[in-house]
Image 1 (cartoon, rainbow, N blue to C red):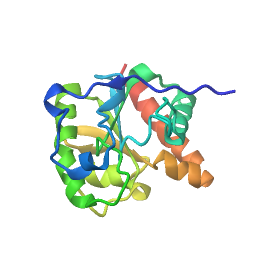
Image 2 (cartoon, rainbow, N blue to C red):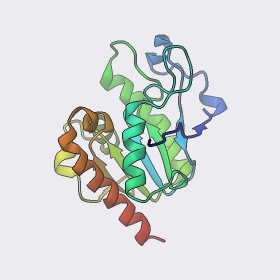
Image 3 (tube, helix red, strand yellow):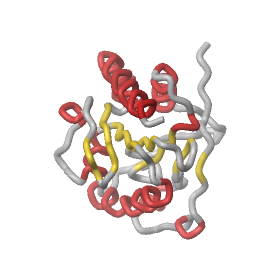
Image 4 (cartoon, helix red, strand yellow):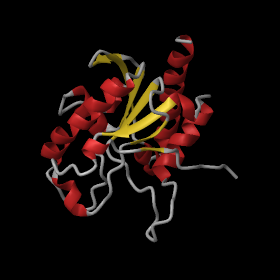
Length: 189
């Protein structure tokens, strides 16, 4: 049986722990800054952290993380090469103003980019692509399979792992995109 694990969580910086800039703090979900290896050469950006705990509060690896970890392994990458972060640092549990909240929360991602200085970025899903690229109509489909210079960093796009779970026909494309990033990473070492 395949093993999955929660990657180590990157602590929220002290000056951001009580952040109330967006209204997601009112929804009761905790802030998750990132996970994996801070300062890793590849930064993966998702829309939000999703669940890291089950309903009882026990640590749990959600299907998004399982799909991502499987593809990472298949591509020959390791946890120490990756840092996963999010446009939103809290998991939304109710309706919210998406555009306003994403815009506000980009300040956190800008802070992480300055601190971690990744060599490569992989945006997973349309929300991450639209927010990071600063293009509200951008979509993964025409962007995948190529490098794009975004904010001075080579950036690739791939489908969101949850979309891959829901639409298995995307699995091959998702793996191709992971292989694409892994090849670029190997060529840099």
